Length: 310
Image (cartoon, rainbow, N blue to C red; front, side):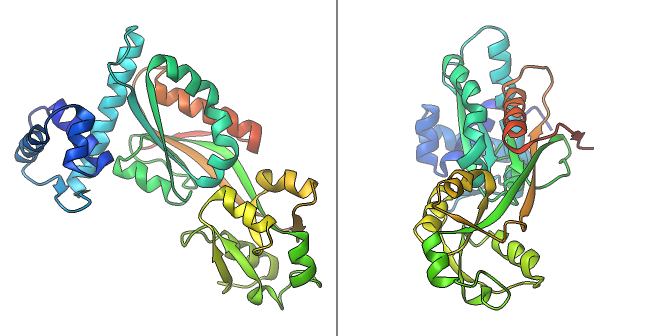
């Protein structure tokens, strides 16, 4: 295969981000016709489609492979520009996927110094939020260059670093405990007690109940609150029992706004940082990984074990 056209790969990346030819053209400051022509040329060179022209459009499996390559080329281009002392004409996009609970607790403080430096150097950081068990899919598909995940094994071409363990505990408001759980939460009443759930991917509550009461695949009364901050707020308001990061609810427990339930029981979620490997030291992606590792070490008691994909 001949060398792939960099401009066409930039079009593919813009389409993956914007999900429309019109918005991709606006982002690249070219015409919609030019985006279509470059994409058709890329597909002709590859011999198969890379985009399904639906609404919203989506990438084919071949498109996802090329998207990974496009992201890596963009990251390398940005790093070369920085090392040569230049400033990119427009901010480079560096997308990483993180889970919502990490974003609500330790990720922003960990990245703050780097983002402040990036404002001067033209870094465009994008945080993509998903469940920690699914952020790895975004990395595999090329939507992001790094992710915080529960997956321990590295993809081929990636490296992984253990960040630490986030412990989840069960909490409820004192008023909820008095009115709904006067005898405490136990094996006889958990099934009739409302539990707060982040979304339909979230099974942390079921894991906690399984550990606390020795029940396999428990059925719970679920109330969905798909925001880390709102989730904890709902627990404070007495909407139900929440299973939340200990580091997030600790101040509220100390202030008497939440009460711990069965504090000896906790769900421990090991988190890992994954990133695509690029040559050279001091690259932006490396700096993001280093900042997250340092932030996790402070907040979670992270470690620094690294493994490379084969």
